[in-house]
Image (cartoon, rainbow, N blue to C red; front, side, top):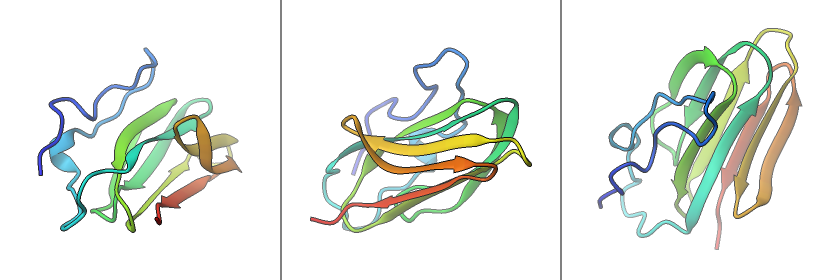
Length: 118
């Protein structure tokens, strides 16, 4: 299964950066076509350690300046989860798809997750 040439990359915000590219996030075996595309988003002040596991793949961690955004394809029956840690700094984490909030948490170490089921 192939990806679009630049599916992952810098988010639309000029200050948001994401370290992952399409070739580092695998498509789940037997997943078929994506049911849509979602965005993981962490906002707050300063730097945070962001940990992401997209579509049941390998966990990946990066420390970077906020905000952090990652657009990814959503496949049925596999879980995506993400967390951010900036110490005691209040952060907001969310996963959205088609303008709908799928997961949301506000606090010092927000954790968000989503699985799509038909």
